[in-house]
Structure formats: structure tokens, C-alpha cells
Image 1 (cartoon, rainbow, N blue to C red):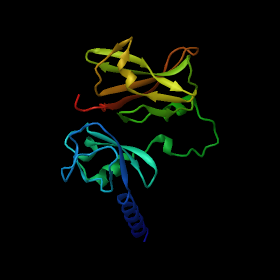
Image 2: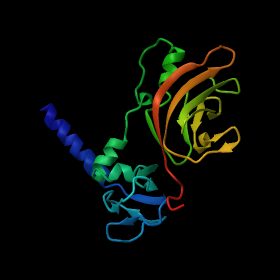
Image 3: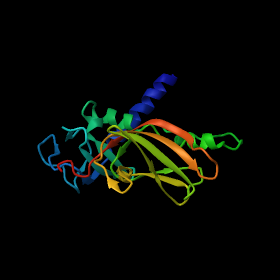
Length: 215
């Protein structure tokens, strides 16, 4: 009985999701088309997530879901190997931030830091991540990654004292603009008054999505 109820609920959810309407806000590749050959353009609306003919992994469109009233990023790499519905489901990754902590005990600094970053990001627009730790000139996150044969460390931006920002400025190091590429980050939390940095997370895969794929 429970299994039947679960399948019924899942079917209802899939029907609801498939009925969503999307409005195109941004396209990074002028050659991206629908299956009927028509170019995908800003201002278009569509309902079938399988209607787009993805040909490159880094083709990207930003859309506004007219049903949920939320923006989302669609990428070729998500859809080329899966049906559109499979991609929508798999892209809704669970985050440690999605779980409610029912414990009355105060969180340790390590627990707070462990809930900030996920394991993979698609970097097009700046990504703002809430952080339940102090963020200012003395307290901040820093990211280390390998670029060619060199290990580079970059201080991450923050705002409002509680939000860390992951954006394309990560490729600006010591006043130099580096050619952006896909990278893997290791994150530490620095408190200049506390001594050594605290390790937060490593193996964070960042896929760089160009604003214009044709450049």
C-alpha cells in the first residue's frame, strides 16, 4: 500500500514538473536550437525540457520557471546523456543546508563550516552561499586550486557578514587575469586571530560556463 502511494505521488509530481513553463532569460550559444531547427532566443517560452537540441556540454541557458517563479540554469552536459526529466530530477541535489537540525545543542564551528559548500558547482553567474560563521576582513574563506603546474590560493568574496561568494573573480590572482577553466577547489576558513586556517572541504568540482560559447 505504501509503495502504491509513493508511486502515485511520484507520478503526480512528474506530471506537475512536466507541465512547467519556462521563459528564456539568457543563452550563451547562438547556434543552440530546438529540435525543430529554430534558434533558442531570449524571450522564448517552452514547456518540454526535451525540446532543445543540446550539442555541446557547456551550452547554457538561464530560464525563469513561470510555474515556480524561480530562475534555473540548464546546461548541455545535464541533458545530452539523459532525458530532460531525468536531468531535472538529478540536478536537484540534496545539500546539507536542506536538512533541518532538530538538536538544541549549539553547533560547533566545524559543523557550521561543513554545511556551507556542496561538491560541485556550474559557474556562470556569482553563486551566493549562506554561512553561519563570521565573515569580514579577518575572517574569510580561501580556495586553493591547481592551475597548470602551479597551486594558487584565492580569498573568496563575502557580503553582509554571513554570505560567501563564488564567482569568476577566482581566476584573478595577484592582479593577473588567468584564462578560466574547469578546476577542483580545496576550501579553508581563515581567522587571522586564531592561528592556522581550518580545513573545510576539498574535491569541489567547478565547471566554468562561458558567457559566450562562441568567443
